[in-house]
Image 1 (cartoon, rainbow, N blue to C red):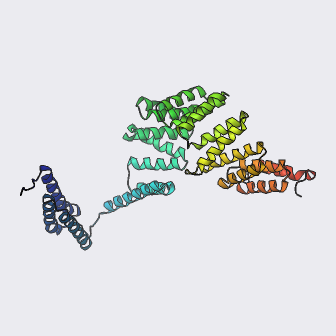
Image 2 (image 1 turned 45 degrees about the vertical axis):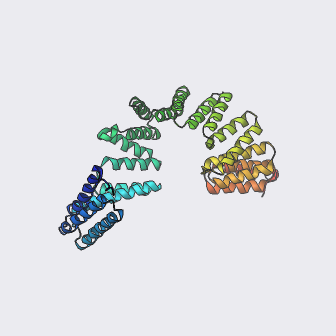
Length: 389
């Protein structure tokens, strides 16, 4: 019978396994008795690998874990105060990472700050804190941290730090610094599609539509979020009253991503303003249908329903317009346009008591909402109009 040949790779694996099991536990833990336990287990693991006996290898691994656990309990490690501080700081940092993965950025930020106070002074902890500030909408705090990292550490050469510095500068209102940082990132070839997109957003905010269009076109050509780029290009064309080109961009955006719900809102509004009411209705209905089977963006869903209600009202379909506005309010109670539109629809149809109920509910959600207060004052100021007393 032909004997199976032991390869060089198998010998190397056996030697590494033996060395790991035999030497690592006593060296790391510093417990003398492990020198009498670990080496035999290391030899057992090596023999299991050479003999290709998985069950024997598993036995060796289990015995090694048990030996380390039992000896660790009988001879607990003595940590110095410095080691305890480092262990505590590392624990806080790992806790912060877990919270960040869960999306709980407030608790993640608190954990990162605890880790720094406990002595974990590493620039990457500051990066994590800055991320949390950005997610919590505190762009100025994030900008200060990223600016310091860019200036005082070697992390400034990393594209992730550079790009986040540029973005936090934009979001905190430091547009010039953000613009320069993104152009510098382009010179380093740091994610050019993303850079062009953010520059396009910047130029739109500064009302330089020509540059914004150029940047968005570059980003689209490089394949960065093409549907969103097309959507913004459509908005730029619409701002110039080039409605045919705007419609072309919006429809391209939907071909590139049929689940980009904001585009249905934009296209529906454009078609309505052009007097193409039935086309607007079909576009908005399609957006509503898609909203029902993908993860919801409640504000956009409410906008779709609100605009659909507006179109139904224009068509005289009161029985469909009212439920659409009511559903928009249920989906996003903080979207105040739906209250306005529903109240005015009630007023136009002499249902003043219903209008009052809607407007009062709007003020319960936002007591400072002036349009609702103004309409309520107008309703109660003219008794002969037929409104409730």
